[in-house]
Amino acid sequence: MWSLTLGVQELSSLLKKRKNFTKKRKQDEQIPPSALLKNNGDIMAKKAVVKKEEKEKPQTQHRHIAGSFGKELKGIVRICGKDINGALELAKAIKYVQGVGINLSGVYSEIISKELSIDVNTKIGDLTENQIERVEEIIRTPQKYKIPSYLFNRRLDPQTGNHVHLISNDLVLNLREDIQKEINSRSWRGARHQTRKGKVRGQKTKNSGRGGVAVGVIRRSVRAKMGGTQPKPKESKKDAGGKGKKK
Image (tube, rainbow, N blue to C red; front, side, top):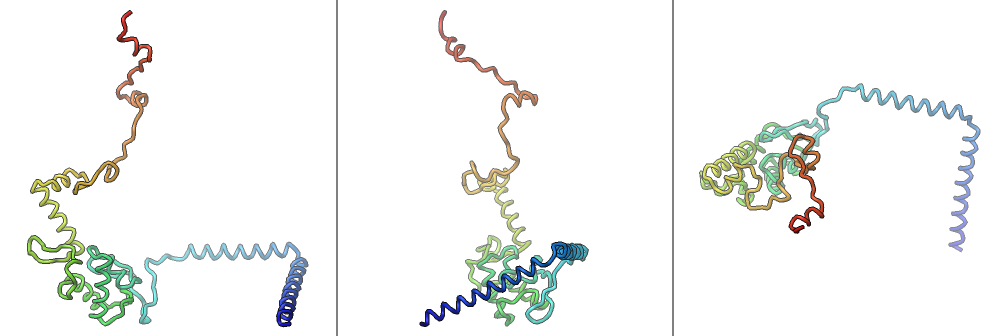
């Protein structure tokens, strides 16, 4: 009985939906087509006006986003000489500094959250100027905060003999100096750098590392028209075979 009653209820609901559908259809049929066209024209005109207003609006350089503390976020924050979007979280933002990778950015974000007593997921646009200075200090001196040396990019520096981590302009200048030392010492790596061959550590260069202008093959006939060497006339098989034979 329970299954039968359920089936009857379902049928009644379906019949009601069908009745409503037929009513709406009859109402639509009674409306003249001219009125429908008029309504559609009004809608299209409104859309055109909205698009025109959007185009005429002055485009702002940076969006003002509400921060976690109710204040407006800074659009761009400068950290260690790099302009970073203020809507990014700590770990993602630090990753954009030259010389800081994914692993090191995660370690830095944890240390910054402990030192500044803030959440790891805070956006850098919420930070004050004093907090940004502290962040730069932590990034520039990781040795103070007991970060393992295997994460540094310059271990056993030849000048000092210590493990150092370089960022931004310091990293670029030291890299140039190292390459110049290799060139001056006339080593294999230095010779490859000097001739700008690309590969330095013995890699193959047949397929990869082929920088420069793309060079294609030019046919002989095209080269002759361009003023190059003239194509040699092809010898027939009879002529080629009869050269060595005696008459």
